[in-house]
Structure formats: structure tokens, C-alpha cells
Length: 107
View 1 (cartoon, rainbow, N blue to C red):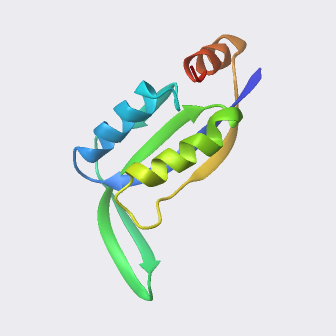
View 2: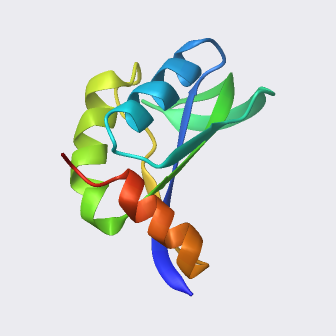
């Protein structure tokens, strides 16, 4: 098993999630981005107030080598003042990890 990373973020429940996914893959910052179609309810404290909003979960598959560039670009594209950027170490089959690595090579 080889290592890759999974990055979690959320987006508003609209077409921006699909646009973000396409951009990150096109720019080779991610090999694959899953933008869950169904909205979820997120409840959180922001600037002293409890908020509850409809959001979509975004799951990004990439490599550790691309994390800094991915985070920078995500912050540029994201509509939130403070986007979620949670990184999970993951183990994948050698074939899948090889594909992720190949698809995220910077040109």
C-alpha cells in the first residue's frame, strides 16, 4: 500500500463546488475530486454566532507534494473567508497511488 492524502473541504450548495472540482483537476492539483451532490447541514460557530447552512462536502485526492500548492489555490478560488482544509493521510493500492501521483505531477 502506498500513501496519498485526502483533503476535505466544504462549499456552498451550488454550482461552485463543481467548478472548483474541475479547476483543481485541470490544474493537476488533484487527481480526483468528489463533490457530493446532496446538500448537508453544517452547524458551526462563526464570529461568535451559531450558524447553520446547506453545504456540499468536497473530497480531494492528491499527494503530499502538492499540498501547499493545493491549499494556496483553494484559498484563491474559495468563496469563504476561512475555507475548511483538513488533510487526512491515506493508504491506497500501489496502482491507485501511482495514478494519483501521475495525475498530479506539475508540468
